[in-house]
Length: 453
Image (cartoon, rainbow, N blue to C red; front, side):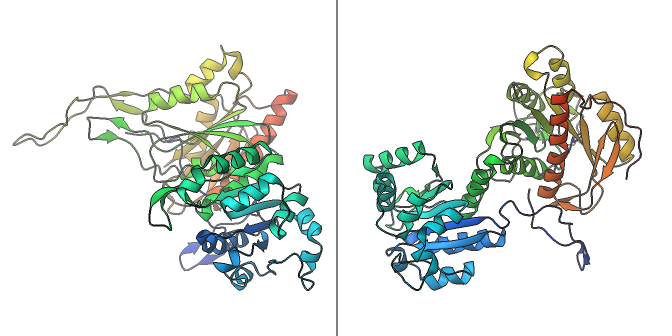
């Protein structure tokens, strides 16, 4: 009852050999944090214990992490703990003659590609806002030109105080990215907003900041994700097996490469990507309207959602109850909107859609190349990503995908990849198309002639 356009988030990168659980995904791209020099500032909050987890996650992603601790931070977590997870010396005293980077504190500031302070106490925020240089952390921030990411952590009343809010506003005005704090249970036993954001979210914020100067900077990309839900009654609906993972991976990868991203998503069991505008819909008609609105002035649309082909002709106002002796139920179905076709039709009439590069997905169970080629041509797409949903390692709900990229010139088969790597490969192809369109040589959904390679 559903014809998915596609589906499939970032997974751990593996090696391209077979193991006991089958082949591991190939690795085509390094992590966006690979070899990035990150200065991690830790100030005196009970949340300092989370800094070790953050440092570990950054290192696992390939970053080089230099930890700088205030004196207060060392009361909550030892420098040895951070040294163990970073594999590098930890700086606690700018007057330590035995620490090379502490003596040459300007060199540390110059080497940094991003400075992240997590947790940042109210006192630390005040020092940064006032431009004080009282410790190694504040000196480093003053001396660097690297982007600044701040994750506050403090009592709820301290965070809400006008002085703290004024300091945060001033830091934002200067370009700092403020992550959190979150609401929840605090160290005092009270509930409120003041918890340091989770390390995973802070890592995503760092990727966002580092992506600002990359190859998709200045571009605006619309991505759809998830399987639409077409209601039968207030309880039941017609849908499909899409997890939304592929669309979310594309949104995150585009963000990491500097694009402004709008993600139009159905309900899925995934957290919204940090720094991505997220629009929530359920039905195909809602997604169609949201896509048309979001595409105004956008550079590209990537339809990774699994949009149901059919919907119930009538929606019952109350839950349909089974009757004694009833052996079945017949539903009359009608077509849902064809979103890509509607966007193509609108582009012929609307100036704000004419430059839009349209990319589709074809999730097929048979005749992959033929069905994908028909969709490429019929919907006037620049190119299409096709995948075989019957594959156990690349179908719905998996963290990997094996995709065929098809355009008017032919097809390129990608190996088994993490969905994040698939997203990066797709964005590589999109960037070529964007540049070709600007030069007047882009694809217009012509029928391909070459065979897959």
